[in-house]
Image (cartoon, rainbow, N blue to C red; front, side, top):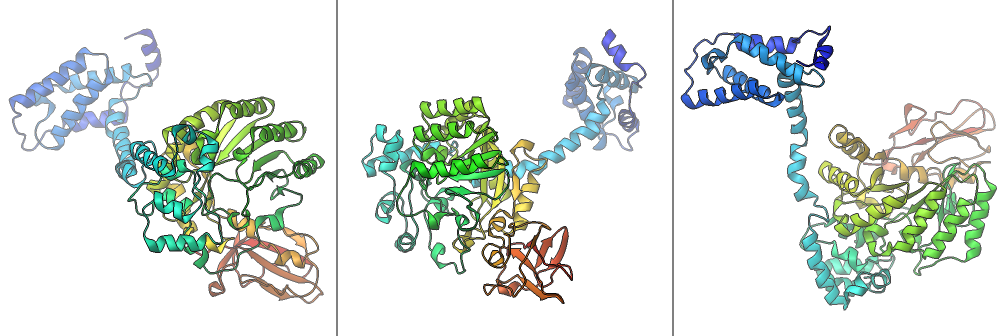
Amino acid sequence: MDTDTNDRLTNNPPLDDYTTELLATLAQPLATPREPGAAQKSAVKALYARARETNLTAPILDLFDRLLSLHREGTAAPAAFAISGGDLEDLAVKHQQIDEHMVSVGGRLTRARPIAASANRRVDAYLAAKGIDAPSGIEVWDRILDNKARIMAALGMDEAAWNSFPGQIRHAIDSVAVLARLIDLPPAQLQSIAKVTQSYRMRLTPYYTSLILPGAINDPVMLQSVPTGEMVENAGIEIPPVAADHSPARLIDQFYPRVLTIKATNMCAMFCTHCLRLAHIGRRDQVYAREAYTEALDYIRANNRIRDVLITGGDAFVLPNSMIKWLLAELDGIDHVRLKRLGTRIPVTAPMRVDDELLDILEQSNDRKPLRVVTQINTAQEITPVSREVFRRISKRTFAVLNQAVLLKGINDTRVKMWKLCETVHEAYVRPYYLFNCSYRNPQFAHFRVPLEVGRDIVESMYGNISGDAIPRYIPSAAARRAGCSGCCRNWSSSPVRPGARGGWTRSAPGSPPACRPPGWSWRRRGRPSSAIICCSAPPPAATAGRRCFSSAIWTPCSRSTAPSTGTKTRTARCPAPG
């Protein structure tokens, strides 16, 4: 035994309780032992010889494992193989001496290995199903290449057009007639799509269309890109668009005091069927006038609370390189702006857009102040060898690449699909960041909504089963936050109510509640000339009277006000979305 091992064993017993218990078990005589066969004796003899002759822990474990199995089966005790208790004790000491952390053979064999085996069983079902239920674009790349060849022929594209961003936009699929040539859809579904596209824009790049797998029922890529009849059939009143109640300046959306968004364009390479702004993007692609961006930047310059700015749209990467460079340089020149973000789906919808010039612009800005690229990937099928390579290149030039997924029914609303999504983007140099619940602001997305409990279960199931930094933060109330108290509360408050605030108080003007009182509001007149309401974000339908609202760490029915008996204060609270 070397000096280091002697030093490690000083003041430590050579055998722990786990090993003592193991040796005692093996020493117990068997009631009716059976004489082991020649082959069995030979196998154990070989294990014993290897355990003694090598300076490895695995042969010792293998020997003890075999002897323990034979003993539990009632076949034979170690003595049947001419192995004494002293021999086993010597090997147990040897194991502990060899191991760098002095782990005992008893602890490893009877405790650690069963625990590891139990943990393994937790993911066995996932590992068996992930390639079937949620294949990545990398795993089905051969099928995607077949799609590519078929789409190129149908659209008259050559490789140069396919591999260029202008070629992808020029040949983008924006009509039902072209879509029908590329995807085999039944006539009834084509009629439904035609009806929807009278109200909402549809556009798929040829590249993104190639990710749709023929014959797949409810293909997750198709569901995100091809509108369906539910978008116009879902009943409900749409809460005003985000811009209506959260835009303090031109092109600006602001929900928080230190973070804001510049909506730099309405353009996207592909219009998502679950997009919050789908109904309000307009029929014509636009890069706005320079004075519009200047007004947005002036607002940021004048507010030294703002620390973090997200440039989005639309899609930030659809902007010309010169515009991206200028906007980033302007933000870098504002002292109190310390970080920037660019919001984009381009790496999965049209990855050929990301050229060397753009990467140089990103790196130059990141050298001045940290720059993150925030994307949205909702299914592992969107990660292909092409998009993975683009994310790898972006990750080398920026501070971080983050994914903000949306939980969507039929697309990623199972453990297998979401685990696979998070692991796949993680392996593609992208950090899973947020998982948003689908919007409750827009009734046209009702068919995509997933109950909050399902989302919580999916995210909680990841802990201990996939890498910790591959687990996104679940934002179940993101849509409600935007929806909270917009319009009605503000119509009769002397100052705006912060949407979705937990226990936030603001002064309210006395008088009657607004005529547009939505379901989920509660109103009680007090003895003094004042008013108190509790306003639930994402108002539930009238049929859900008595649903419970979360207000300052207490659950109270929506029908009960938590405001004080006196004063002129209004309290806002969150109401869980129907589900």
